[in-house]
Image (cartoon, rainbow, N blue to C red; front, side, top):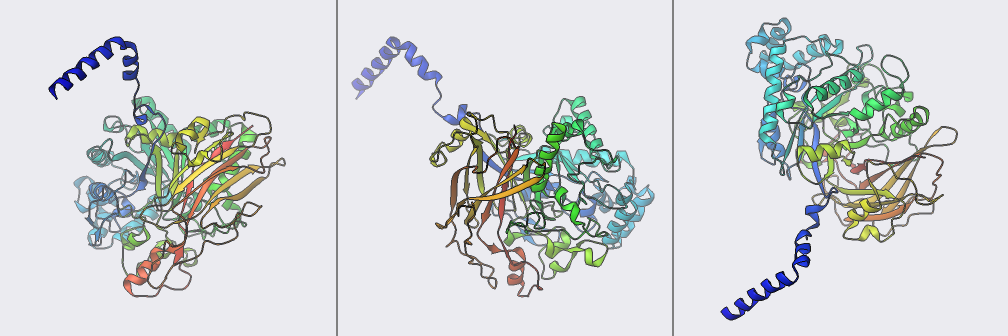
Length: 625
C-alpha cells in the first residue's frame, strides 16, 4: 500500500510538471456555478411594513411589544402577545423592516415610562394621563383629531424623538445578521394629505445603510410635509449628506381617494417629466396587498376578471368620512395604475408608475402573521378572540366604517437575490426583482424575451436560461430580434410546502390602444388537473372546492404542486406599449374568520368570507417601442 501511495505521488508530480499550463487552467475554473454566478438564485421572504409599540397608534391602543420582540418573532421564537397569548411562526422570515410611524415616534413607551421630557409638554401630559387612566383609545383619538388630521406635532420635542430613533436603529443593528437574517433600518412617513378629505398617501422609507449613516438624520414626518415630493427631497439630501442609499414604498392605494396614482400633483399642477423621473428614482416598488385590503384589481374596473373582488376595501376614505367615488378607483389599484403609467409615458416620455410589487402586513401588533390559522389581527384589539371580528378598525360614519372582519391576513414580500444581506436585498428591491403574496409562500419565477423554447421552462437551469435569453420580473424587454416578432414569457410557480396546491397561473396584460385608451386582458397560461384552456386563453372550468367550513379544513387532493409555461402573446402589436405581470392562484382554502368560527365554537354573521383563494403577483415586465 505504501508503494502504491508513493507511485501515485510521483505520477501527480510528473503530471503537474508535464501539463503545467493545463493544470493551471483547471485550477482557474470554479466547479460550483453558485460561486461565480451573478444572477439572483434564491427567494427571500419578509415584511417591509411592520409596526411595534414605538408607533403611537399601536402603543396607545395596547401594543406593549417593542422592536426587540418583533425581531424575535420574525426569527421564529415563541413570544407572548400584547393580549397575553402564546404565538409563533410556522417558519422564520428572512428579513424585516420595522417601519414605525415617524410622527411622534416612541410616544407610547415614553408615556409608559412617564418620561420627564414628555410631561413638560401640554399634550404630552394630557395623553399620558389618559393612557395611565386606562383610556388609551381616547388618547389615540385625541392624537388623531388634534394632531395627525391637522398635520400638527402635538409634542414637538426633537431631543425626545432623537433618542427613540437611535434606539430603533440600535435594535436593527443588533438583529441584523448578514447571510442569515436582514434587519433593515426604516420608518413610515404617514401623510393623510388634507384634513378636509383624509387620503392615505403613506410611504415606508427603507435605508440600505447601517446605523453610522442613518443616525445622521431623523425620520421625516407628515408634520414636516404631507407632500411626497418633499419626502423625495429629504431622501435626496440624505444620500448627498451620507453617501448612502434610500428608497420608499408607497402603501396600497385603496384608501387614497384616487390620489396615489393621480396625474396631478398635490399642488394642482399636472405631473411632468421631472415628476415622473423623481418618483421612479425614489419609489421603485409598490405595496400591492396588505391587511387593509388587496390593491391589485377592483371588480368595477376589471369586470371580466372573476378573481378581481378579493379583500376589497372600497367604502370610504381612511377616516370613514366620505364615500368612495367610482372615478377614484382607476387611480387606486395597481393594474390600472400600470396602464395609466403607459398613457403618461406616451405623453411625457417617462413612465411615473413603473413599479414593481411587494406585499406586506401593516400589522400594528409587532407580529408578521399572514397564515389564516395563525392570524393576529391589525392591532392588539384584533388579536385572537371570539368577538374580535366586531372591533372597528377605521371609521367615523357608521355605514362607512371597516371592522376587523374586513381585514385580510396579508401579505408578504418575496425578493430574488443572491445573498441575505442589506445590500443584496436592497439592490433587488431597487431593481424590482420582487413579488407579492397575500400571505402564502408561493415560489414564482417570471422572465420575458423573444426566443424561449417550450422546453426551456422544464430545464434544471431554467433561471439561467431566463437571464441568458431575456429579462426577469421588474425589467424592460429588449428590442425584438426580428420584425413583427411577439414576446415570449416563461413562468414557473411552486406551491408553499406548508399550504395549498395551485389552481392556475395567469398573465395579466395591460396596454394603451391606438386611441390612447387603457386596455387589459387576462390569459390563463397553466392550469392544474389537466383542465383545458380555451382558444380565447381562458380556462372556464373551476379547480373545484374541498373546503370544509365547519372544520376549517381543505384537501390538497385537487390542484397541482407546481405549474410551468412558456407563453407567446397572441395579440401582440409592436406599435403599442404593453405591460405584463403574473398572478398565481391557490385552490380554495378557509379564511381566518372560518378558523375563528371553528376554534371558538361560534357562528360568523352573514357576509363575512369563510373561504378564498390566496394568490401571488409578480413585478411586471414592460414592452415599449
